[in-house]
Image (cartoon, rainbow, N blue to C red; front, side, top):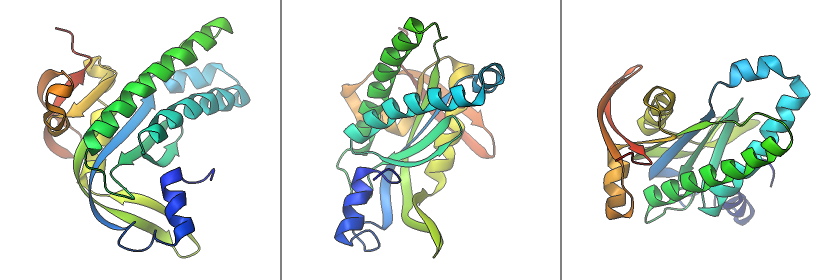
Length: 210
């Protein structure tokens, strides 16, 4: 249970993960999240304290993601990748991802209040969401593999997350995500933005400033 998300664990136990139920093409909303300015922070704090802080942070973020049936793909240092819409398809993966992002920011507010009470500095995060087609399933060797998503949507989401600090929004979404949400959420339209190793993408920021 500690190594995979609950929705993946259920399919492992049922024997469905390697079947079409858990593998193949999916329409996914892919999320990346990262702690801002983590490198200078980790230089000032002992490694064991950094790990303890990250574990508290990830505990809360994962809780918000799993509450919306998200699948945590991996933790990368102070960052994480997850997706919505697999292993079982979702009728509204973008809504799932957006509500999870809101939940994560609310969880972060609570965590920062705890940090303040303990005399620790607050942390800020950047979150991105992108929607698109990807292949999900086992990737790796027979002796060591992971359940993951492969596709351009994952690359785009990772690149958009890198824009959050520059543009000053805690959440950036590709325009397709904002369109899928329709009247359920308002965003600031930030137009097309250049991202590394990819053609420019149209992004929107939340919460809106107008």
